[in-house]
Image (tube, rainbow, N blue to C red; front, side, top):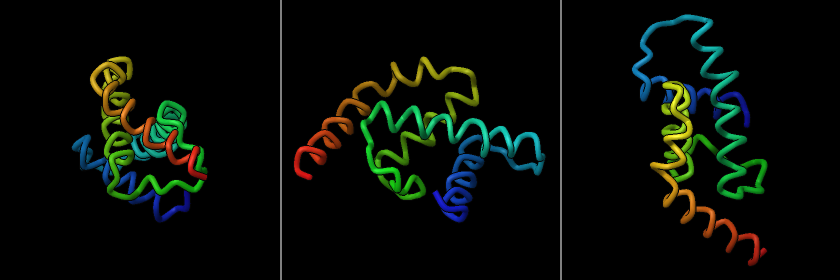
Length: 102
C-alpha cells in the first residue's frame, strides 16, 4: 500500500479510536504494528489474494479493517472474529467467487 493510502487508513483509524493527540509511540503502534497485522490477518480470513487491494477505500473490507483495528487496540481481537464472523464469511464467499471467475 502506498504512503498516501496508508495515511488515509491511519487517519480513519485514529478517528475511530478517538486519538486526537500527536504521540510518536501511539502513531507507530497504530501505523506500524496494528494496521499491518490486521491487514495481513483480515486478508487471510477473507481470502484476498490481490496484494494491491486498496484498504483506504469505502468497501465492506475497509470497514472491517477499521473495526478490527479498534478491537485489536482494545486487546479484544478474538471478540472481533466472533462479532463479525458472518460478515467475514459473506465477504470471503464473494472473494472466492472472484478467484473462480478469474
